[in-house]
Image 1 (cartoon, rainbow, N blue to C red):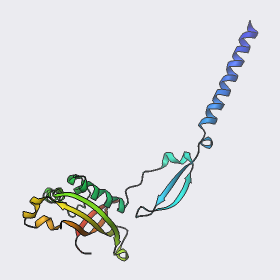
Image 2 (cartoon, rainbow, N blue to C red):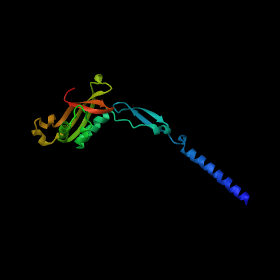
Image 3 (cartoon, one colour):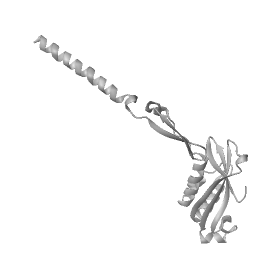
Length: 183
């Protein structure tokens, strides 16, 4: 009887040790394929690929949007008829109070359709780590009621428009600093 208990205890111990070994082997980083992460430059163009071991992914941080991402999101929000969200992407230097936020929101809301046709870097020689400029060509349809305002259609033409968009880095995030007709 004592021998049977001893064999049972040994058998359970062996199963336990083998089970732990199998669990550790299956959960080890070596048994999981590494992920490939693509890095991009400031304009969102893929430049390199790097294989990163899975165990390093626990310390990975999601990158902040780059300047070109900000432009795309900004104009998409206007196109999606979300002017208040677009205004939130603007620099505090131009939307520093509720009145200026509301004025831009009304202007963006008057755009019943906006389609970006082209985004190009502008004045690249003048770029700094915290300031960039782009020339954005887009097609816009304005609300007919905006034609009767103090500045008809808020200065936008029906159809193709070109605006120079200055971006500035505030608190490590790119913000729209200005939308102008010239550089």
